Image (tube, rainbow, N blue to C red; front, top):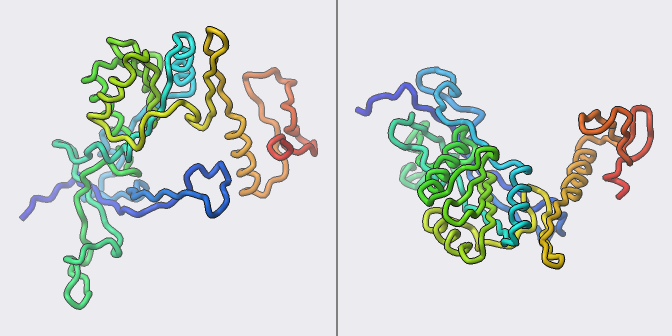
Length: 290
């Protein structure tokens, strides 16, 4: 008989479907959808009754911030290096969650996913509440983000990348001085043209990617533009479309017609954003008039 593990936890898995690039508002026939199997991290049970969060060992992750992305772009502009982005394919499940020394995680599958061997010849279930061991860091598990980040960091360190202390999830390559910023499964690299292919190839040997590296266009919801002006490369970051879409969706969901100005430490007290009403005003927000 298998020994009971008091620290083991159990949760259910389910599928979730979402529209890709929904901000484009594509016609119905041209929309793309993506389904993902996820772990219900909000409802985890443990055999011992201990609160699940007390058992989790790795729950902290620190993806690259916009300031780090802009720092990478600044280096790209100053040095005239190409900047390319790439998505890791199903990033979290590239890392294992069942490593030695970790508490076991079990999952309940929807009955429609049960294999045929779990049913009798007449279609009756053989088991009352079957569970399966979770082997990969599935999306939704509270530790998956940190486990993937640690997995990727180990690979980068073995490939002679060093962390940039002042910028979370930003790395510099010791030999080539290339820079790499990581936002969960999105990797952004600027490197000398003579070393760019070999750096991506080294990563490909250890990490699965969805596509080939592509010229930087949209990253972290912002449109980035690096253009040549004479002998100088200049950079531009546009978040206007993302912000306008977010405001429009908020108004649509809440039924609100107007937005109120909010105080900010970045502007004087008497500053009033154009197109956004103050208390008592009836001006429509810029998102609806642009």
